[in-house]
Image 1 (cartoon, rainbow over the protein chains, first blue to last red):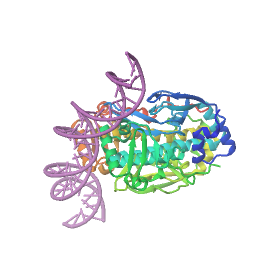
Image 2: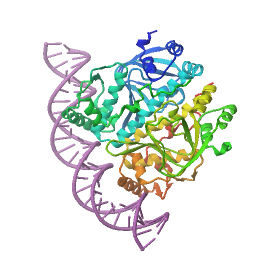
Image 3: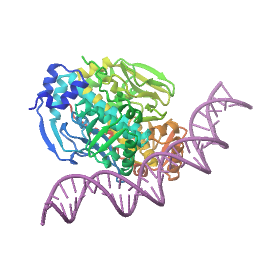
Image 4: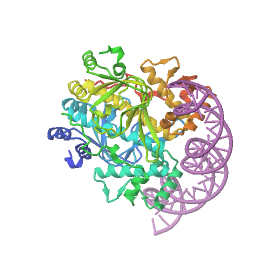
Length: 247
Length: 247
DNA sequence: CGTGTAGTTGAGTATGTTCAAAGTCTGTGG
DNA sequence: CCACAGACTTTGAACATACTCAACTACACG
């Protein structure tokens, strides 16, 4: 199986939690099943009862919910290093579908394996728990984003977040990064229509803040973007000082 | 200390997870510090690093975030039996303020105590983890609610949720329940203005679905409310069949 | 009886939606 | 290599939903 550097979720875990060498080794030793998916494929569908979780080794994913009147909401994006359905570990019935946005490589782990590791090491359990809690923190921030910011600020906010999360796994080049998503998907994430996404992007472009073209985002002015998007990265809990030593 | 029936979080835990008598006894034996709060008091403020968690024994609470332009978002309400800041167990810096809406009685537990219990019993860890995951599931649903439903549907949805959550801890009378909240707070939860809350409530009243008066909600037509709010309770994970046996 | 908070109403305005059509890009097959 | 199909983006115009502002009402509390 791949070395540590090839498993971005180990990189992410080591940044998010303080794990002993033994724990890292245990995580490294987990039996994984790798699978590749084309873009726009459901990996898990609302209502299923999965017996495993998966980490993203490569690619962009999202979760989504469909509403009764044909709408769709994307409550979160997931990038390399994330474990989008880690909550299925303790929530048998999945309440959200998970789907690839770009082509993806995923590493599947049995629930059983994870439960065994968590039971043996409270530090591992804490680290994984923490991962799900950071997801929760991001959901809260997105609620605020969708509920209380106008379209351009929402857009700027999500782009700032995407930048920092991709930076954390080494997937940015300067202030530019791959974000291979359609304007429709962006609208479903921000709670606005596709047409309005288009106009919002144009306006941010005109303001000299952001360029989004053929799946690549370029942030033209980071400080101004943070202001425009009312962005404070605390909720991402990327800082290790923000860590509870769990003996 | 109070008996099991007087601790709604034990009732909730026993409904949400399958715990052995020994585990229940351990949870029952936790040293608690009870404190009462008036309405509209901050209990935890964004940026703090609490060394304990609290469960709501009585009253209504919310978490909230302030935006740069003076807006406020309430990402969630919490009722008796909930543990609003359980995530602080593994997320040292709190990213959301927690505030009483009505007068509250809270039971504080030291992080240390909870860590010790979780370390000793993976079933307890799983149950508490599950609590935080259900919170996360509710956040996702609220994102969908705010992002993709119009005002009246949002309102109906939140009221349906409040009804079921209060029912689960025995705090409803028929189709009526106490929900002592102002229209402004409701607006901050739904992402709409206070004025629009008022008009939305009037319209639901006219439709014969809901009455909201002086802190009491009366659902006039439950099936119609579910339709109006596009409400499917699966995301609340109240059903114990939705439970992962964690050995 | 006055004060403050919450709720209510109306009018004008802003933000974002819908619908329809045209333009662009990319991959595929002939 | 070109033509074509399909998905994505862009534009305009009419419309809907929700916001802001300001005034007024109802009610609880001291």
